[in-house]
Image 1 (cartoon, rainbow over the protein chains, first blue to last red):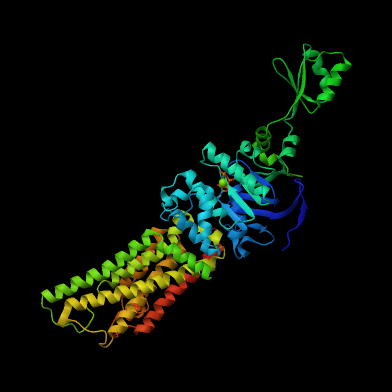
Image 2: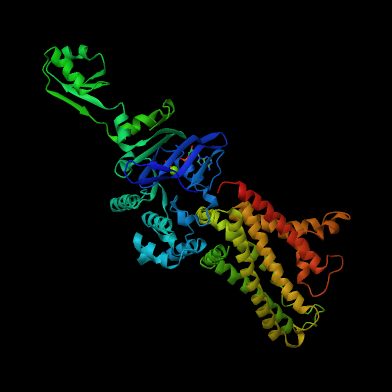
Length: 315
Length: 247
Ligand SMILES: Nc1ncnc2c1ncn2[C@@H]1O[C@H](COP(=O)(O)OP(=O)(O)OP(=O)(O)O)[C@@H](O)[C@H]1O
Ligand SMILES: [Mg+2]
């Protein structure tokens, strides 16, 4: 099972660790995931983005062998998740932090997971230390706050020192300190060459963490691209122009789409250079001329609002 | 597989419900035996032809407690969502279920044996002349048989829990199949009643708990074998569903 080598934007060697091919999942008449194909590479944080109900959690459950695809296939480092002898040493996943037996102590919860994958018991103490739960190791998890449960879930994911990490909405319920902690952890894990696949419906969160984005809407792939490209490609990038002679300027900008605002114009579909030259050719004075980059959030909103109208664009 | 067994063993002893159910089983068996024995002695009852009449009176209740414990071993994971964490660690579902079954069977058999022996000696201590010995005909067989019956009943619960995945539903199914239906089937009209009833779950299974074969019923091992077939069939159906269904 040698993974395919691919060139990485980050320079170093990257490997394809997760592959989904034509993945489809139906629940009765609902199509939760619809012909999704993508790959996830090592050494970077890949954000899995989409609005509520887009099919992110369903896709992750299929990647991890919990749900059976109606169609298509998924492989983790070359074979289905269920065929890995010690899956916790290959993949660490946090799906639902509350999906634990509340009657066990944090230590015992991690211990039974460790034993099932031949992981030494000493590792339990290490991961508890790593996530800052050593103090409560002997408390029952039923009494944990959501933030503590989230940390315990991350401890469980880290137990087997896995190459691949999958987190479903890991920042849910965390305070700003916790969010920063997870973000740093994910960046560090990717920097160590691991594969980090993390879902979110918050673009702003991904903007600060992810290198690559896989965007889904209504179960379909909308975009599979680097974060930079994703912003760049958005049609929301516009040129902001202000001039004392705005009415004279408008007819010159037929090459773009012009929106009038109080004291300026927003031109879509033309570069700042084109607008500037058009104005100069008629000798019109410009007081302001600049390209406004869309925020990631805006680009994302635009893509997902009418997700079905967008054909998949792959880089 | 040994890894899965160790893990399931840790799971079973680290939740309180297991301990409480085991305590309840011990208290039921021991409590009923001691009370029956004390009553027998106080009322100066004649020596019963069944030498362990006053000893294993708690078995029918203990069977339901064991079945409930068996249900909880797996339905507890579905209720909390822990099953998904379990399946991430052991994605081969049959291996996961086999681990649970084996660990539970051994734990149930050991506790049942200890409980029954303690119960036996406690009630003998009270009974004095009314009592019997381990060496008397059929006694040891009935005691060991009762432990096997309790263990099998626990597995009956586990199979139903794995199939139904919902604690109350599985417990109700267990009560119906193990208590209500055997009673109903017995009162079927004509020849049907006794004919079918002999093979029905606990009616067949409990033959192994008696010191002497019962007239018209299956033999002890025959009956127990039939009970095990019931359990195996439910377990196989549960396994097929377990493999097919989403977790
Ligand atoms: N077990 C199930 N049975 C029936 N429908 C389901 C099931 N699981 C998910 N769905 C449906 O599939 C669709 C996708 O759900 P999913 O939970 O994968 O979305 P998501 O992208 O994770 O959303 P969120 O951001 O809210 O977590 C939804 O319409 C949901 O109602
Ligand atoms: Mg989700």
